[in-house]
Image (tube, rainbow, N blue to C red):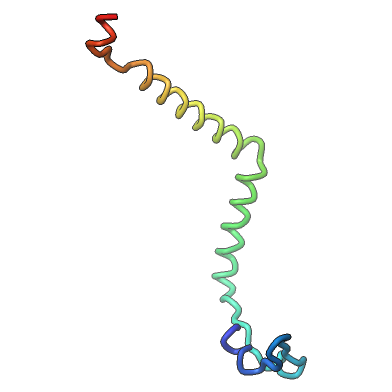
Length: 86
């Protein structure tokens, strides 16, 4: 679109494209199959991000596991020799 538009731009400070020239620009449209695939992806994304039963509980579960992993890692450090002397 931008490449096509460049040839019809007039003006230097305020760039314009008149309506007749704008009508000459071809806008690519994906095939119906590709449109369906895109819609499916967006619907799934919408469901995951807006659903209380899918997205949020899964995210909470993952953060809890992450927290437990790092907590256990911090608490399981071997004692150094300088700690034992103190």
